[in-house]
Image 1 (cartoon, rainbow, N blue to C red):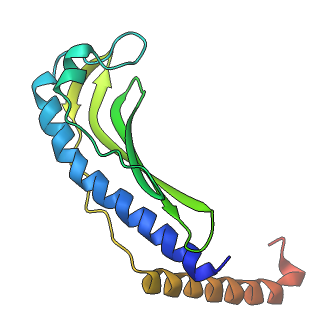
Image 2 (cartoon, rainbow, N blue to C red):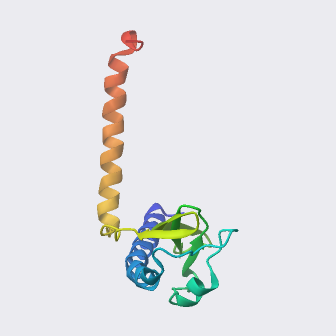
Length: 156
């Protein structure tokens, strides 16, 4: 498997998940705003029908480049998970990436407040990530050299 193809697939999956997360937060926040102070979860953690009906359609694509969004059950927060899948070119192998989008805080099944919008998710380039990986490897090597020079004193 070509490492450049693998890195390209991961960068694409991360960037697509980040873009989707930025797009869905305002849609979900606007739909949930009228429910602040109201019960939004059933006893089993599922959204109430009233809330479910108010939610917008969320991205769902299929194929070798797919995106899905699903509600994450929690007693403390309203959270949606964006999951992307990207094919590694020239293979039958896929890479995935997930991003959590927290939209509201919950206490005793009541939506107490909306979360602040997420800060801007970064976008990446393959070249930028490859350079960062190289810098990390160089730093690890330097660390190991320094650590080796302290061998007689490793317990201090």
